[in-house]
Image 1 (tube, rainbow, N blue to C red):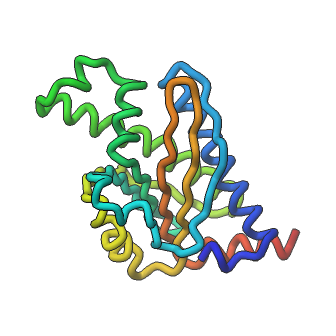
Image 2: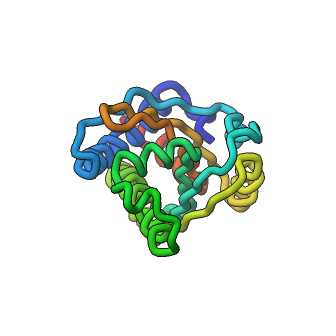
Image 3: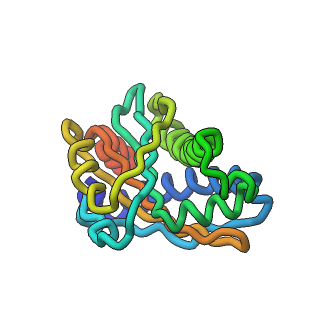
Length: 202
């Protein structure tokens, strides 16, 4: 788990994630046609204790899951609040789609969120793969809309059979968009072991 890494190992893990998000940021800037920055990355030391989702007033959250395949098995989850989803739509989609409740528009919105996840997950997976020297790829992402209070139970079920849980928040800041999505990555212990091996060799 992330808290099992020492200071140097945590720096390596943070750099991996930051570099991956930086690649995703470039793709997001192309969609937004506006620069954005990654202000900070915050780790939750309590694995699945995503306290923000305990508040029933927060309503629904959009959880996009990508299953990891190859040398490192696991899943990644990108989680947006309802407010963050609205901000994404407003920044990137025309009003004709945002205000339309037809099935076609709903599918377009879901496809858009899945594409955001695809960019972010693919970029971070590429960094993991290149740096750790292992082959990893992601399957097609799937979207779930859950009540905020259901998220912790869902993630606990998803993490069964895996050893390492990495939960972090990334703060994206820009003229057109300010969001702080949650990322929860569930891995085999191989992820932590690889980082420890690389740091000990270095």
